[in-house]
Amino acid sequence: MTLTFLLLYCVNENRETIFYMLSFLFVMFILPVLIIAVSVYLAHKTGR
Amino acid sequence: MQDMHQIAEGFDSYAAGAFIGYLLFLIIIGIYSNRFSSKGISEFFIGGRKMNRFVVALSAVVSGRSAWLLLGVTGMAYARGPSAVWAVAGYIVVELFLFLYYARRLRNFTGKRDCITIPDFFAERFGDENGKLRITIVLIFIVFMIGYISAQFVAGGKAFASGFGLEMNTGMLITAVIVVAYTIVGGFLAVSLTDMFQAILMILALVVLPVVVIFNFGGLSILLEQLAAMNVIYVDPFAISAGAAIGFLGIGLGSPGNPHILARYMSIDDSRQLRSAAVIGTIWNVLMAWGAVFIGLAGRAYYPDVAMLPAADTENLFPVLAQQHLPPVLFGIVLASIFAAIMSTADSQLLVAASSIVRDVYEKIIRKGEKVDQKRLVLYSRMVVFIIVVLSLLFGYLAENLVFWLVLFAWAGLGAAIGPTSILALFWKRTTRAGIFAGLFSGTSVTIIWYFIPVLKNSLYELVPGFIAAFAATWLVSLFTKPDKHSEQAFREMLDDH
Image (cartoon, rainbow over all chains, first blue to last red; front, top):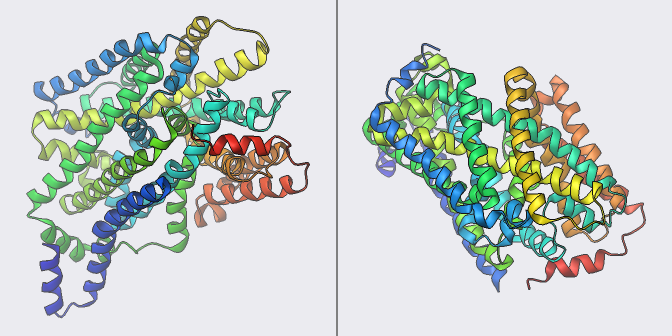
């Protein structure tokens, strides 16, 4: 849904909003997944 | 208060049933834990170091959060958009590192030296023969903890007032009676098990509610479109000044200094289990925190003006959204989750404050060198828990302003005083007892002074400079004082997992 929204903005003239939407996508969806992935990696690494 | 009754009106018999069921369950856990917790003060205060990784992980993350996450962070995200995420990201990352590195050393050392409290740990680590270091830390704990516990009861009173339309004082009393009942009866085991149950309630509320409200709005893309049209800050996570961002991320520096969180690390059955506890705790922290931010964002789209919220208070966003979008039973669970957040923090702080008095003051200073009967110590512990609750309630009734003044400093003051000193005590062999005194003093004083100078306070959250000052003072004074001859042995014990 967010991707659809981003694509819509890409073809629209309001391009500066794309920057905000990409940062929103990164901080609200990718960052939490990254934090969990790092926790799994470090937990595995400290166990060796 | 009339506005607050808007929330109370949504509370029907189904919601009441769910809420009362939750309270009864807490009491049942207390009774179930009674036999185990009555064996001795190690069992009463840190569960005899027999807690498993799930209990430790969930208990550590929820006892550190309080109602600030449910009401404060949702309100913050409502007011300033997704940049509120930086207020939660800091502590999540810090707690991940605490679980993986700090907690292992703390658990190994305290297990081998039979330390039950954080003052116990410092006293053993630095050979505190005359008890001055121990009593200094106990004093810092007691001052901040009573204010902290009192603030939880006041928050409970407010939640009862908005959720049920009760008088605030009555709400405070009910909150205190429930917490004291299961804490006195079941000790640490009851507190940890109820924390685990409360963690499940909190995650239910924080994951289900944003999904439902965003779905009801028409989906995430429509919500974002609406927010972007209102003001671009509501979709820009970087709409934040550098000082505010550092201050937000700096909130996490409080975690290594708050003893109710550290006691959880000391209670795990095997330090090697802390690795999986780190992953479980991080997943829980991330889901709860991001859920709270999404609730705030959705709230802004539903209520574009703060005057549309009950009492025009952003902290009412969470219950009012739940009342309007969830079926009654789920609304009851959401209300229970607010109490869960409050109680899971209050009960843990209560045990830490009581353990400082019974273990550190009575057993280790007043009855130093004597063999004290464990059953008697447990009895005294229960009495002290009760007395602290009464004092905290009185404090809350009579000096509500003072309570909030103290609680402002509790997270930052404890974080700045205990955080850097405990980190250096665990990771730097050269740390000395004099260095610890310097760190405790400078951390607490810089935090308080910074807060009272408006120019400084407005530029940066006081915990950050307090933490840096304590770290620097401990390091510098340690460099110029005689090294501790027992450090080598202490570090061997910290690194030995068996």
